[in-house]
Image 1 (cartoon, rainbow, N blue to C red):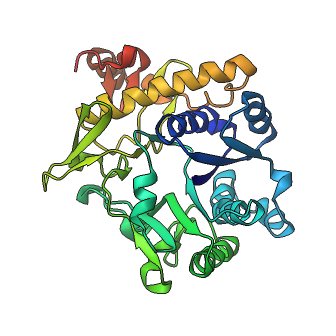
Image 2 (image 1 turned 30 degrees about the horizontal axis):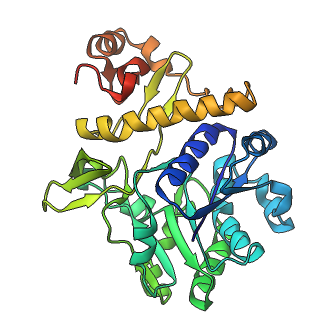
Length: 337
């Protein structure tokens, strides 16, 4: 049995539900503890009656220490601050042997049990960014990504988790300062600071916009296969991190930060299925609350109206700088590619 926890507010509601459904599809034995960071999300998630999830409201676990600093941090910074606290609460409140925190904007393409098994007798599992050299942000954003991190309920696992929890309470902001960044750069020295820490080796755990340029993808039913373009190593894609994905009322999708180059095979085999999963998530949420996702459609792509050149390029090519019109992904196919 695998135990996971995640946290999100209404802005990530459809993404969080899509992530849950992908786990349900690929992982036969799991339970997900979802920390709803607003009343809206909590109510919708409860109505969805997710059979393999427990929904946890803020009033069930926020303590005085967290509440005192809440007003001094942005909503995003507070979520980062709470990441180790939610893992700690999940392990202790539900007496779990282990727990893996997962970001809400992941989508699973195969069973993540292979990643947990890789850690063997270790007590903590951390996942490297594996940056493409052109996008290397190790110095400012850290070597490791807080996207998939596992702690066992043993002395070594709890020691590292307790240290991280305290560190994030003391300082956790969306800026690089004195060798720190958010909740993330704290992980940089864990292989030396703590015993029993394992760095994930499986290339299929942690594919993301900052490293996807190194790979080619192909569908080999029922798995999605990746291949390292430099070593020719093949691997099964376990999950993809859809960092900075957003969309607007005009049906324009921003797949990721425009500074990252996305290979065609990634758009076809990773982003097209994700958009379908979000559409299915949206429809499921609408069945229980038609207003549920109004908070998500908040990122208008206003730059189109500021430049005729960009607007013309967008409509001629069908995309511009990782922005696409949703019709390009009809039936999961990339039209014109």
